[in-house]
Image 1 (tube, rainbow, N blue to C red):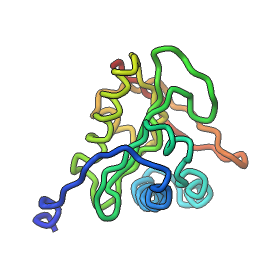
Image 2: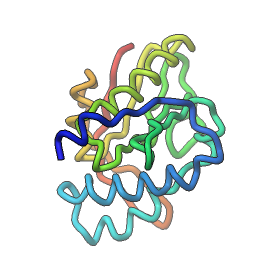
Image 3: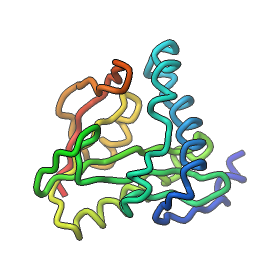
Length: 171
């Protein structure tokens, strides 16, 4: 109900390793629901177990955030390292593992988390964000000012591939 939704609040805070189970539960719900219109069910059945687990390295980095609510309203962060590797390019950072609970979409959760990431990245000397956006996430990142560079395929464990969009934002 819209009235119930309007009265709910959340608080963006730095994630900690103890958030792992809650982040995984959030990502499972978010990705299964929000990616359903962008990817075939068979593809999602294979991919979701690989992409919905909270990443300990991100949770321990101090650069990953959650929107506190019951349950978590959203999560996301950034890293110096390129996803899937340890390559670092001076002045460039990568948006990582964003998700919003389906009950919290279009309520400013993802934008609030991104603002926190952007502000901290700027303070760390980052000049540009890169993002491997899921197909369904492209409109969210475009609304934040990201530019579409090109379609890409993100390699995942067990030979799986996630069709995505490479996007960038000058900070």
